[in-house]
Amino acid sequence: MKKEFIKRILSSIIIAPITLFFILKGSVLFIFFLCFIFLVTTFEWLKISKKLKILKFFGVSFLFLSIYLAFILRNSQGFEIFLFVILISILTDMGGYTFGKLIKGPKLTKISPNKTYSGVIGSFIFSIIGCSIYLKYVPTTLLLSYSNGYGKYAIEFNLFILFIILIISIVSQAGDLIISHFKRLARIKNTGDILPGHGGLLDRIDGIIFAVPFSYIIFNLNIY
Image 1 (tube, rainbow, N blue to C red):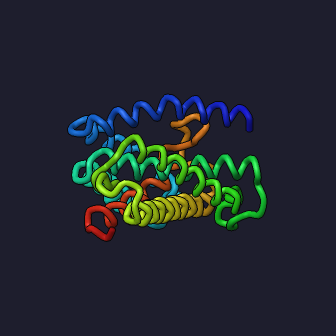
Image 2: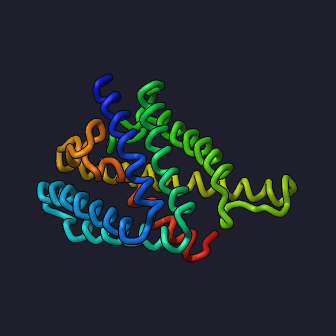
């Protein structure tokens, strides 16, 4: 387990700056990045659904929709909001993994035996702390106010931000469980082996592909 953890850390160190580069650059480079993600995750999904012999079309359609909405969200709301959503999903996964391994405790569900209640709490804690730091240094006109200082409005606005972080984190965790359910049905541990320590690309972004469409509804359709 220690070797797998080291592999996970090292691959994350490599993946993170590459992903950030494409997100910040946007334009054609971002489209290329999204196309690569779609092709790889589609291949991995077909491998799962081939064994299950169900949901092939549904899964590929959902992946396409999620990737397309990622492009729309990045272009319409700016890279700050898009990174905010991605960061929540990543921190959710990190918090769940860290707390689950260190604290362990009662299992969350039979769908994914490795998921624990302590992992859920860790997901929330990591997301809240990490995003609070992010919003402090990467302000956005959508999520932050510059006018009322520390008055009543600012306190209410902080509660709103907290709600957004928690709800996106919940959706991300739900996405993780859904993909875990299909992997369990297919009797495979990982969707692939492209990322050392993580498994397949779909293993890595299973929460993100659900968080992005949900975030699109919140930000682009003005649900907030």
